[in-house]
Image (cartoon, rainbow, N blue to C red; front, side):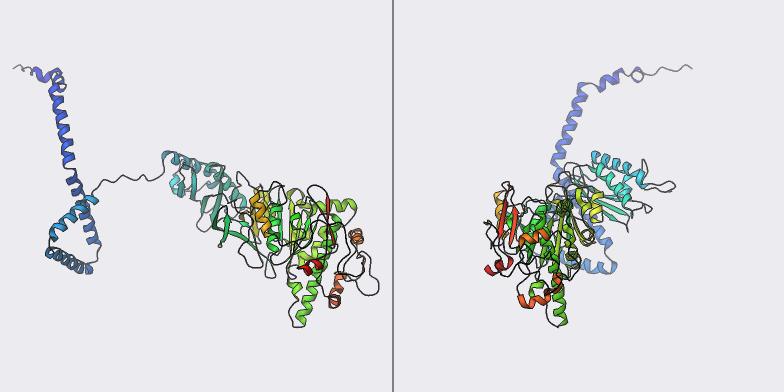
Amino acid sequence: MARRPLPRILTHSAPLARMAHSASLARSRELARSAADSASDVFHPLITIGRGLRRLGAAGRGRWAETPKEQRGPLAFFVGACLLVVWLVPYGPLLALIAVMGAGAWAGRERTPVATGPSEAETERLRSLYEALVPYLSAEGDPSPLYAHGGDWERAFVEYAFDDSGRLERLQLKYPAYFTDGEDRSRVRIEQVLYAKAGRGREYHFTWDELANQLTLTVLDALPTDIAAQRFVTSPGETVLGFTDPDSVQRTLPVTGGEETRDAPPVVWRTGQRSTEPHLLVLGQPGTGATTLLRSIALQALQHGDVLVIDGSGTGEYGCLTGRRGVLGVESGLAGALATLEWASHETERRLIEGNRARQAGGAAPDDTRRPLWIIADRPTALAHIAVAEGRDDPQRWLQVPLRHGRAAHVTVVVADQFETAELLSDPVRAHTKARVVLGPATAEEVRAVLGAPPHTTPPAQVPPGRGYARLGSAPVLRLQVPATPDPLDDATGQAHREAVTALLPERTVPADGAGPTEPVTGGAPVDVGKTVTSGKPVDARKPVDVRKSARAAGAEPDDGPPAADAAPDAAEETGPAAEPVGASARVRTDKGGEPRVVNGSVEAVRAEG
């Protein structure tokens, strides 16, 4: 029996296609879509409330499941009591229904999903940083390497953060236990890779946690440069070298920066008999702020002590200190520097002898031996060149006694020089200056050579004057920004900075300009300290000395015999006045214009007028 053919409507698709694209069917679809949208708009509040009630119910069931069984009874009793009170209160059920509907509407609202995790650009940056660390933090034979090409960077990077511009500002990563994190060379290699991949032009701080095998990279803010010279709130024996990061020190000082007063973290250097770093060495490039730092230290030291300044450069940067109360001398010539430093050496010995005798007698040390004495030498190696050319002694020779015994005698030595001439510094200067400061642009090797440890930060792109690193003894290396203390006599100094420095200067006790050398006011016959004492009474180094003779004899090597300072305690009973530097009765200062200016008067006259 032959099969009958199927109807045409089932074998040909043209009618179905015409039916699908007909105008009536398209109109029906549009009407259905419009009805659905209208219903969604009408029932949207009910949908929101229903969704919220469902969430509240789920949260209530979860809370009931978390409640211990012994506490479920009191909880059910409390809920039942609340429902009873609501039922008895007038309009209580209606108010409860309104509250439940409001809570459901709030809980069922549509929340905008918060974007979590890094963006595509940030993910690509983290992945490239991970791949760059693979050659340095992986090893052959590791069965489960933390760092591998094409590996999972989320396992290695524990925490990360980006700023608004998409640049990395914080990263905490893990590294394998076999990485040699105790070697500085290995650390520096990883820090260089992170510095290059995280973005140059910023300053980064690296914190190594050897116990947890983690490294934290943090972007540091620029240190403030608007802090000028001012009176800092410190105790005697404390000197503010500058300011650093808030996380590096546990102390703040109120300072005035611009037009506001705020708290800033200082780098405080402690001197005196209890100090472990009684002397300071400052090194840097020309124009990086070493003289500014020494000027700031001198202004702070004049509050409680006396200051001797040796200006080896001879540019008159310390001319504002000349003739001020507490300033024993400002010398820029070789003869005056030799005579002044020789006196400082004898004065240190005198203080030690008198203090020892006072303790043996059961009494307190004299007041003049307990008053701090600061010896500030700026570029002493420049005078060493002149001394070699003229066949005289190196001025650093007379710093040996103050450096070795200065802490017990309340004598502090501050030396500043440049990197180019640092190798000319004497061995005592290198050995006894435990507090170190490096200013200006310097490589990690140069910082390590001076401070004894490399910095844990990358070098900044822009180095303002007074910016550098400081290390006090064996403490960590700190970033440092020296307060602006320019020369008030310089024409390039701003009016605000000039007034700030001038306000810190002590009153003037000796005229700035003098007609010429005058006779010492203390009386007595001049004595040439360059001659050898062979007989008679020992020479008292504190008595007035002829400047011309002392200058000629300053470079001569003293012959064998008792030094003048050995007899100082015996002569102190006869003379009485405090010690005075040789050549202090007439000092010569060279201005920036090149003209020599003579300052008359002695320390005794200065103190007598005060």
